[in-house]
Length: 299
Ligand code: NDP
Image (tube, rainbow, N blue to C red):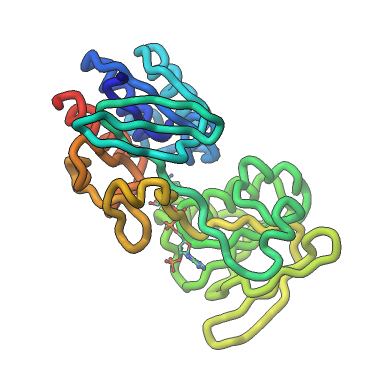
């Protein structure tokens, strides 16, 4: 039986794997996509201590290599079923048939991008609508793009696109951005960036591909904005439904665990963005990973 199964290979999960291996524990890390988590799509990370300017991709790769070098084992499969208990051991089954028995679990599943939930969103995904500017921005080189959202992701996406596209609109439902002021200042320094405030995207229009979006303001005023692309960056939601019968989740689906990363169930820990917490940053995810691994290693 493995000592610790880590579910998710983002910053929290990979840091947990490093700490657990250094504590002499056997570790299996499950990951359904590429290792690295959300940060892999961030062009430039300027707020991780001692690594100013590192790309999210390079950061994620370094972290993955570090976990591998420490001897963590990786299973690239999405965990679909978790059974058992600390007393008898936990049994994890993956979507593609992988199986693991572990004494303790660290849930580090992170979050995924929120969808707009309007007509045409699914239909135009990949035909103008995208959730990842660094993945798809190059398809719109020299064209017009719009970004929807007001947080750090949206503003970073708009900055990235401003260097590729001829014109970039940023649409946000408030007059003030939620993003860090330094990022907002950088965004507003671009001549080809225009803000659309306070608006939400209420319609998606086009024939084969996206041609325009309908914007609605708080007072009900509507306008049509011609654009070749819409990058949706309206926040993140957890994906913890597989654990709903195992641990307590809050009404939004985050795992209930406090700063010691312990859940209500013995032997099950939650680390990083997937748990109830106020500040979701790389450093807090790394901190959680270390905390969860140290606690799990002591059991
Ligand atoms: P955030 O939750 O920070 O921002 C989401 C934005 O989308 C908010 O402006 C919010 O509006 C808006 N929004 C939410 N729901 C809707 C909706 N239904 N319709 C319209 N607009 C909506 O998410 P991010 O993805 O930007 O960031 C997530 C976390 O990651 C944050 O903690 C962020 O700081 C961090 N991050 C840090 C980075 C860095 O430090 N370099 C880079 C990227 C992310 P409102 O403001 O009105 O709530």
